[in-house]
Image (tube, rainbow, N blue to C red; front, side, top):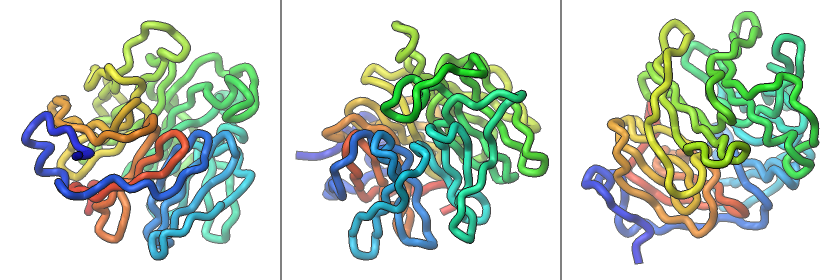
Length: 300
């Protein structure tokens, strides 16, 4: 039985028909935020409720705890120097793993008030850091520490690399979640998961045009009929690979859903990795999965 559902011929060109989905590890409570670290030949990902950062070593297939406690980290990415950037629910901050192994705070407050609980993060080619700040880490004690929002809203922020200043660039969402730039960086895509707080709110990925570090009005790019869109990534052809309740779903640049990879757990996030960047690593509920594909991330 195939792990794929091909809905459009364009998807068939992105997959390897006989490649099977592999479960590399299980034992988490809610796994999230995978990032591939080429220099370490490893994938790091979060097991948020257990407050630990996990590591998969692709050289021997071993899994170990990279750091615990870790501030209830969620999303991760790499900066232009290959340093890990993390969103901390517990610390209510965006932090960076420096070359000497210590974590430093990059963003903690907006207009003097503590951030909610940074969720997902991406670094643009100009070095600016963009992240979402919903309230999931302060809604309860499960993924952080329960607290009231000091900001009173959930924004997408841009962190200026030169000044360290924060700018709210998206303020028209209830709970912005995953985010990614298109390969040409002319569009920022953001997942809206506000249905967790406003029943009936559409579950969408919205696209915002980017010009001079500012965003224009957003448009709905994709609508989910199977749970939430959470984390997602683009391949170099501009296809969007996203999480959903039952699968990794793939959307062509025109917004057409062209296929899906069925996963036996709720999918939270994903990233491309491996020496050739053609291995899709997937975090889903309690486990880390992987499958080889014919797609590659931008720049590879």
